[in-house]
Length: 112
Length: 113
Image (cartoon, rainbow over all chains, first blue to last red):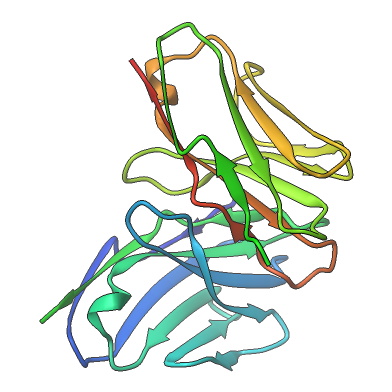
C-alpha cells in the first residue's frame, strides 16, 4: 500500500547549524501533512503542519516545505540546539476522517 | 487543560495473558487513535474510535481490540499475548475539525515475557 517514507534514518548536525529532514510520500490524494518530534520515552509532539494548498509554512525556528510535484516534504530547523535531538516523523492524512499514516522516522543527533 | 493520559505507564505480562491499556483524551476531543511502536520502529496504526464507534482498523489480528466509552475514553485489549507484542502503545486524540493534528499521550510500555 501507499506509505510515507524518509530518505535518511539518521542525521547528525553541529550545534548552531541548520537541519533539514526529508520525507517522501506516495499518495497524491493526501491533503494534510504534519511533522512530529519524539524524544526518548515520550509520545510524539506536534511541531508544525501544512495543508496541500500551501507550499511553505513557518513556525518558530522551523519551516516546512511541501513540493507536490515530486511528492516531497521537508522540515528545516534553524540554529539546531541540543534539545532538538529526537526522532522526527512526518505524517500524511488521506481520505475521509482524520487517520494519519506515519513515516519510519529520522533520528536527529546534535553534536556539541 | 490536561493532555492525553494513558495508564499504566508500564505493563509486564506473560505470554498468553491479556493486557488492557487505557486512554483518556483531551476534553472535547471525540476521536481516539491507537498506535503500536515497536522498539526503534515507526508508528503502526491500530484502531480509530469516534463517538463510540470503531471507524478504522489497521492490519493487526483480531486479538487486538478495543472500545470507546460514552465519555470518549478508550481501552485497548490485547488477548493471547505474544512476545512480538512488546512495544510502546500510543494513544492520541483529536477534535472532529479537519486540519488539527493528533495530540499524543506518553504511551504504555508493554513487555511480554
